[in-house]
Amino acid sequence: MSEPLKLKQWVNNIKLQNKLVIIYVVTGLLPLIILFVFAYGQMRSILMDRDVRSMESALRQSVTTVDGQIEVYDNLSNYITFNETVSGILSYNYSNKYEMYSQIVTTFDPLVSSLKYFHNDINKVTIYINNGIKHDTTLAPLSEIENEAFYNSAVNSTNINWYVDKDKKELISARKMSTLATAGITGIMYINVDYDSIMDIYAKGLIDNSGIIVTDGNGSIISKKAAFLDNADKYILSDSRFTEFIEKADFSENVCSNIAGYVLIKQNSDVTGWTSYVYAPKSLMLKSTNSIITMIVLALVVACIGMAAATIFTSDFITKRIYKLRTSMEKVENGDFDVVIRSSDKDEIGALIHGFNSMTGTINNLINEVYEGKLSQKESEMRALRAQINPHFLYNSLSLINWKAIEYGQDDISGITLALSNYYRTSLNKGKNTLTVKQELSNMESYLNIQQIMHDNSFDVVMDIDENVLEYESLNLILQPLVENAIEHGIDLLTDRRGVITVVAKLHNGLIHIEVKDNGIGMPKETAHTFLTSESGGYGARNVNDRIRLFYGEQYNLKVSSDENGTVITIEFPARKPV
Image 1 (cartoon, rainbow, N blue to C red):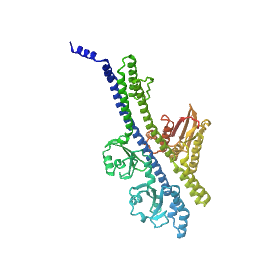
Image 2: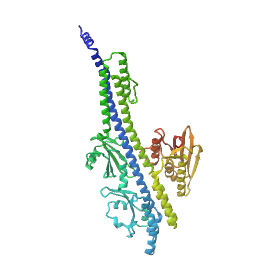
Image 3: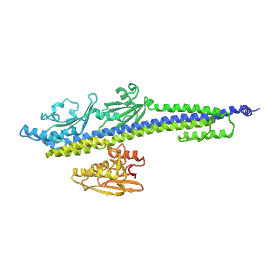
Image 4: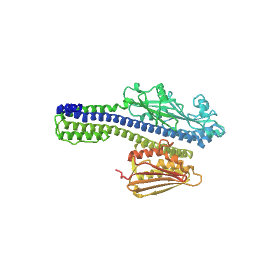
C-alpha cells in the first residue's frame, strides 16, 4: 500500500470524536488564540497611542497657559516701561524734595502698585534707577541689585528677559527702560512673580503616573513636578538621569519612546524660550491592559470548554454555529468590537457564544472608559483654559481707567474701577461654556468699542448680521480673539489706508456662518497655512479652533484666507437652539 493510502487509512481509522477535536482545534481554537493575541497587541498599541496623545495635549495646554500668563506680565512691563507719566516723574528736575515726593505718592505709586493690586501673583514691582532715590517697594537705587545674576544682561538690554532660580523659587522679569535712557537716567523695570503660581500650572496638566521637567534656554532645569500614584521615588527622574535621556533622545514630532522604558514628550515655548518635557514609564502606561489580559484568558478557557463539549455533536447544526462564531471572530480581528451573536442555546456551544459576546462587550467597555476619561480630562482642561483666555485685556483696560481717574482726581471713579476689577476677577471662572450668538456678538462689540477708544477711532467697524442667527447657541469667547488678531496683526500695521473690520453672520444650510474680515496687510501663504497649528507664534485663534473642534466635532474648524488686501477668518458650526 502506498504512503498516501496509508495516511488516508490512518485518518479514516481515527474516532469521529477525535476527528472533531482535531478539526475544532485547527479551525477554531488556534485562530481564536491568534485573534486574542493580535487583539491584545492592538489594544496595547491603541492605549499607548491614546495616552501619548493625551500627554501631548495636556503639555501643549499647560505651555500655552503659562505663555499666556507670561505675556500678561510682559504687557504690564511694557505698560509701565513706556508710560510717559512714569518716565516724566522720574526724569523731572524738581525744585525741592516735597514736590518730588508729592508726585511719587499721588501719581507714581498708584500706577506701579496697581499691577500688584490687579494681579495677586505679582510679589513685587520696582523701578531701580541710578540717582539713589528710594521710596517704599516701588522705587529703589540700582546699587541694591548690582550683585544680582540678572543685573548685567538687564542693564544692557531693553528686551524683556525672564530669570528663574529653582532653588530660591524666584521668577523675575528685568529690562532696561529706554524712556529713561533718553533722559540720561539708567533705569531697570523689575517684576517678581510668584514662582509656584506659574510652575504649578504644569503640574495641573499632568495625567496620573507622569512627571514634567522644565528647562530654560540654556538647558538648566527650572522646575520639576510629578504625579505618580505609587512608588514615586522609583519613577521620578533625577537631574543626571534626565540629562542622560536628553542626550540620547531622538525626538520624532516631539515624541521619544525608546529611552530605557520611558516615553518622553517635549514642547518648546516661543514666548519664554523654555522647553517642557513630560515623561511616563511605559509599564505604568500599560497597566490598564491587565484587565484585558484577564478577559482574554477567561475567554480562552470558555472557548476550550465550549469546543470540548462540541465534539459530542456531528450534525450540520453544530458546524453551522461554529462557522457563525468564526465569522464573528474575523470581524473582531478586523477591529469591529460591536459584533453580537444572537443565540438562545443553552448547551456548551451556546455558552461559548455568550462568552464571546461578554468578552467583546467587556473590551468595548474598557475602550470606552479610557476614551471617555481622556475626553472628560480634555474638556476640563479646555474649561480651565477658557477662564484664562485674554483676561489681561480687561485688567489693562480697567487699569487705564483707574490711572485716568487718579490723574484727574476722580477718587469715586477709581474706587468703582477697582471694585469692578475685583468682581470680574472672581466671576470669570463661573461663566457657562455656551451662550447665544446675540450675546457673543455683544461681547465682541464691547471689545471693539474699547479698542476704538484706545485707538482714537482710527478704524471702522461694519456689522452685517442676519437677525435669524441671534437666538442660536454659540460657544463663548470665539469672536474676541479673532478681532483682536485683526487689530494687532492687520489694522495696526496699516499706513496707506483707514482700517475696516467687517463682521458677517448668517444662517446657511443649517449652519451658523460667521466671517471676521479686515483690510490689513494680510499674511504670507506660509503663515496662513500654519496659522492654526502649533507652529504659529500666537495661540488665541488656535485655541478657538481647538474649542470648536472639541465641542462640535472634528469636521468644524476655522478657515483662514489672506492676501495683501486683508485677512478673512471663517467659522461654521451647527445651528442649535439653547437648551
